[in-house]
Structures are given as structure tokens and as C-alpha cells.
Image (cartoon, rainbow over all chains, first blue to last red; front, side):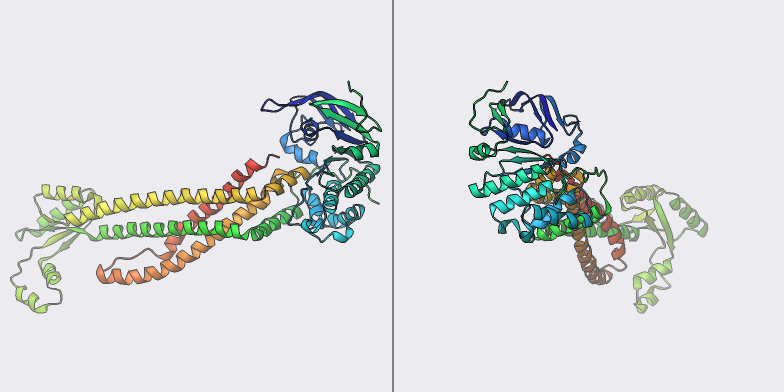
Length: 231
Length: 308
């Protein structure tokens, strides 16, 4: 599903974001990407989101070499990868419903499709009663649920979350994690970048640890603290 | 249960009808939401176009009036009383063949006296039989700048010529000065409005940078992102055209009516351009400037922020 082959990234200012790295994430996997800020995990996410292009190497997502897709095709590629951020990034002037509907309008869905699909997704993330609220009327957890709903409303096969619980208290963080787990159980490949050790340890999912632009650990059903060198 | 499959991902290469109407509505909604900024943009456009319109109307009318004056200012060629009818006719032919002479009319001794005496019948009667005034040709020149050359040609024929040298010179230099000055003012105003509109849209785009970023992450195409801004920009342009058009139309009508009365009293037979002529010339300039620039401004402003 997601495959990095010999991928490296050197930024224009000379900083190395990622040394030659290979990585394979299978369809339906739940993967934690861990490491301190500046370790290179953001670089990996940005490469998968096609926000930046690698200096070397090939990135295959959904059987497509995304390093070769043209600029005009990027929007269509992004529809296959739902994304959630630490700061939610909701449109403040739109209600919960409209924020989610917006993602469907962007890809050209009809009003009918939107009216059918949005309530279903709202139910899934547990926000059916908050559909008419604006983001500033919601708690952090509810805002993140809205963002997750927006990320999955178009049935993207991949969901990428960048520090999704970074702004949330521990209890809410757990709720969000179990929601992501739930989404994963429905067949969506989920990649979560985080540095919250407790969550990583507890979830017992695959953990890929990045340090200084290199993958230093890759362990299935692992925890944050297990020491093992990645080759 | 929600089925999270890929079946819904359809590659939409062109914007669908319902998407376009959605984007159009989004543009208008955002225009209303950003109405303070939109108002500022409209106000600057309106102001620029109003000044442009006034300069245009003034310059255009000066040109028109000078054209009329050119027609009116003539050269008088006085004729010797001893000339026979045949000689007079020959002379008329010669004058008509001078380049840039548009019209030659013959004024008899009697007509000259009538013009001189005006309504003073006593004066006319007194000199009727012993008329001291000579017969003359009134020579009209096509353009005021050519008057000097025509006068020289007439003098070469050995004729006594009377013309308004000083007045002619004033009109020539006035015409040139007005055209030069108004061109500069208009060019400066065009540049100012261009900068203002581009800047305002850049500001709108900047305010909504976050929104654009989100749209890009969701997978919005460039055209999907551009359309609402274009609608917003062009709407500002359209409002910016309508207001000064109405204002110029109304104000010109009132001012022209007032001025025409004065002009008729002071210099008989000078007219201002009809409002229709002004509008026909001005409105296309307005449309090209306001809508074209606001559209261009939106595109330029957006291009920088589209790279997420």
C-alpha cells in the first residue's frame, strides 16, 4: 500500500530530512511513526502526502509511483489519503456538518450524495448531535473527531494523522485513538505520527521509530521503549 | 455501518455543474463575509474610476470644443474693390486649391456692412451707399495647427489677410497641454487602481491562506480553489464599474446642462459632447480596467499561495 524505496530528502537549505530509507506498510495496517521533532517523521509524512518530493528514491502508494505524478494530478492523489493534524485545521466559519460536506464538495459530490454520506460519518465519529455547531463551540476532542470525519468521508483507503492527540488531554487522546483503531478495523490503512509513549506502548501496534533521518526501529506489536536497531 | 472502500474516488477532470454553482455561491458568500474588505476594494476602484471618468470627460470635451473652435476661427481675406467678378472667381479657385483649406465663403461688401452694423439700422442706412468695408473671403482651415501655413500661402498671393494669430496659438498650446496632462493623470490612475486591486485581493487571499491550505490537503483542484476567488474578485470589479458609471452619468448630465447654457451665452454655438458619446467611450474602459484587473489580480495573488 505504501512503499518507500531508497528514499532520501535533502532540503534546499542543505538540511537532510531523510537519509536513504526503505519502508513498506501493507494494506489495512495500523502504524505508529515515532521520533522526536526533527527526527524525520514529518518528512516521511510530507513525502506520503506529496507535499514535498524526495531527492532520491521511489514512493509507491496504492500501486502508483507518486514521485512521477504531475502537479495537476496531485489533488486527485490527495483524495486517496485522508489527513488529520494536531491543530485540527477546521474551517472556523463552517459548521461541523459543512466542514465534512466541504471535503465532498471539493471532489464534486452531488448534494444528494453529501446529504446521505455526512450523517453516516457523523454517527461513526459520534458527533451526530453536534452537526450544527461551529468549531469554536466544540471541545478539542470533538474538533479532532470532526477532522477525522472529514478525512474519511471520501472513503480514502489511507488515513495519515500527524500528532492527532498532541493538543488533547489523556482521556480524550484515548478516545481519538480508539476511533482511529475503529476506522482501521474497517480496512483503512492508518499511519499515526506521535511521540506519546503511553499510547504507543498500550496500543501494541507496529512502531517505526525515526532518529536523525533514519529508521532506527521497526517492530510489530511493539512499544516505544523496546530497544532494537533497525538495519 | 459505514463502508470505507475506494469506490467513491472518482477522478473528476472537469468541474461539474453543481460544483460550479456551489463555487459561485461560495464566492458570493465570501464576498459578503469579507464585506468590509470588499467595501474597501470597491471604494478604491470606484474612486479611481471616478477620477478617471472625470479626466476622460474633461479631456474628451476639450478636444471636442477645440474642434468646434477650429471650425469657427476663420481667416478673412479682404478684396480690393477694383476686382472684377471673373477675377474674384479665379481667386476663389486659387484659395480653394491651397492644402488644408476646408471651406471658402464669399462675403459681399453689403453683407460685410450688415454684419458690422448688426441691428443698428441707422448705421447701415448711413453707409449703405458709400460702403467703406471691402468684400472678403472667409477661409476655414481643417485643423487649427495648419492655419499658419494657409496664411503664408494666402500672403504669397499678395492678399490682405486678417486672422487671430494670438488666439490660434493659445488654442494650439492649450490643446496640446490638456492632452498631455490628462494622459499622464489617466496613466497614473490606471497604475494606482491596478496596484490597489491586486493588493486587496492578495490581502483577501492571505486572510484565507489557511482555508486554501485545507482545501489542498482535501484534494481540491487549482480551479476549484480559484473559482470562488475569481467570483469574489470579479464581483468587486462589477460593483466597481456600476457605481462610477451611474455617478458619471448623473453628474455629467447635470454639469453638461448647466455648462451648455453658459457656453451658449458666452461663445455662441459651442456644444458639449452628448452623454451617450462619453459613456460609450468610458464604459468599455471601465469594464476592461476593473474586471480585467480584478481577475488578473486574483490569479496573480492566488498563484503564490496555491503551493501547499
